[in-house]
Length: 155
Image (cartoon, rainbow, N blue to C red; front, side, top):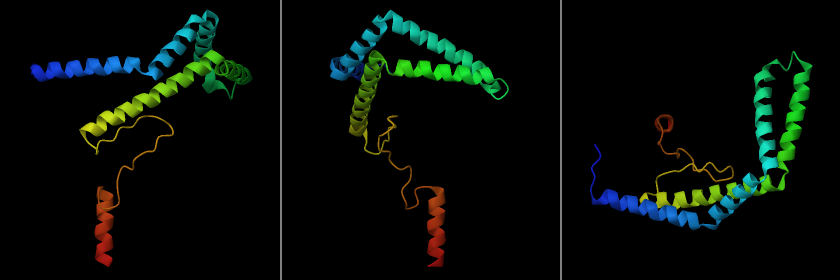
């Protein structure tokens, strides 16, 4: 059962302060600005919605591509539309702001986690982030412990 006391209210207040500080971050402001700019372009929003519908229609018939040659043509058209969207300046700006925000949130998460414990690993989901190994040589997993025991037997 949840115990409601002063520490719970202190934690809630700390969360509110973190949220306010996050909103002031330049990456958040850039992301919100890029998102607003993208959403303000009605033509672009409609193109994105149309692309989503075309993608769903293609996915419904994709498995029949080897039997129906028109599916290949539909795939080419879909990829062409995706490329057009990907090269749109507003989409590029939004995606870059999104990546920058994700990177900043990952940095803040690492800082928060390291203040609790250095042994906690947080997978940030960033594609180029260095990953910590799951196990270290020295018997941290069952397999490694058995390998070390076997090596000791033969020495």
